[in-house]
Image 1 (cartoon, rainbow, N blue to C red):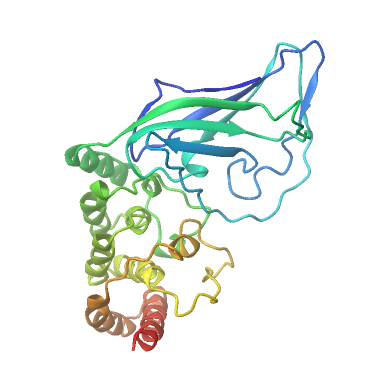
Image 2: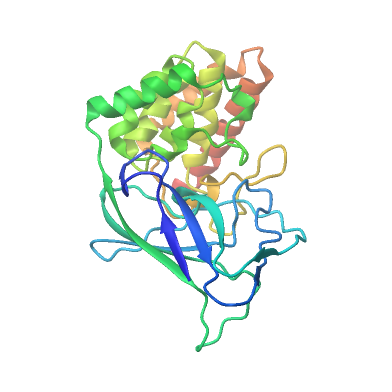
Length: 301
């Protein structure tokens, strides 16, 4: 049998990590083996757990996009009779939680077993509640994170191995505080702005593009380019210089585009000014943004 356990009452604030523990209990008289080899696939979390999360309106949570590098062989865990195998998980690694409400969470793992109608995979389930913070609470949460997080260089943004807490702050209520933090030089805040699905977030990035801080402007250029519509649907997602696809990045925005056409002129003018700078990172991203803008304009004519 399996169940889910929480470190506190199953009520969470939208924007915080929803942590839980999957517990597999051997209630039989013989030991059992639970195979989890190859689970991590370079993501930093076990990917073979399957989450089915439905809100109180019957809407299914959208799966989270992540880069899969393939698994490796691993030894099975032996679970003795009346003993447990436990694994800590974070819900948002698997599904996108972007609105408050009550959710039914179901989780299972194959553990190397072959499921049959008579013996299906053990499924753990629980109900959780997600509440929306006030604007003041959201601001305090962002400010606290901005103060304690290590400085992240602009070149490190958008990489799949960087998972700052800001990536969970995807509700618009966090946008004003995120923009303020980003303008103050907290580059991690861009990861939250990028994942807010509305045109206000696009406008915030355009304002940040005009920053006199090169790293802030460079980060804004990076994420503005990701919001531009792809010229044709057959174009492959862009990749970072290291060759890895950004999770929650280009693939996510294939279906969720929030570009604001009236920003074209302003963004083009600002990006051209960036080209004259001496910082290679900012120049490269400005050039890339201008190229994407050019292709977008050609398609819109």
